[in-house]
Image 1 (cartoon, rainbow, N blue to C red):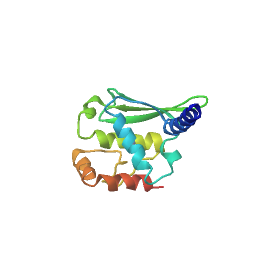
Image 2 (spheres, rainbow, N blue to C red):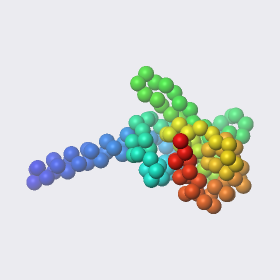
Image 3 (cartoon, protein in one colour):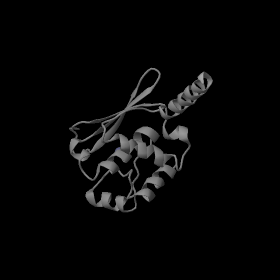
Image 4 (cartoon, rainbow, N blue to C red):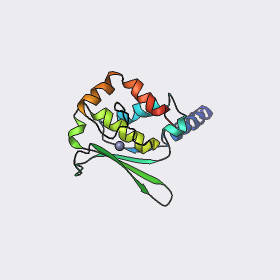
Length: 149
Ligand SMILES: [Zn+2]
């Protein structure tokens, strides 16, 4: 009986260390979006790329720069990068939340740059019309960014 318990503990330990490689602090309504992002990523890319060992803090903050819906900031620590995603409060309750969050996660988790194609999650400019198009074929637009070099 005792042996069995030990084995179980070891198995649990292994599972935890792979899923916790990304240290995430996020508001409750945003956490499911991050989990979905990681799951989507694993459809196209190796698991270790999709949840790198980073500290990622997501917060809802008023960004004073005009027209900015969200931003990803990296701070270089002595041994580690710490990344912050900030989201404008008015975005959190809007239909744009998924598009803005995926855009910032592509920056922060995978270092994806902006992309000029009009209908693209990584276009620097977002409008309600563009977001509507992205949502009409969401999986296609998401996977296209994951697969881009
Ligand atoms: Zn951006």
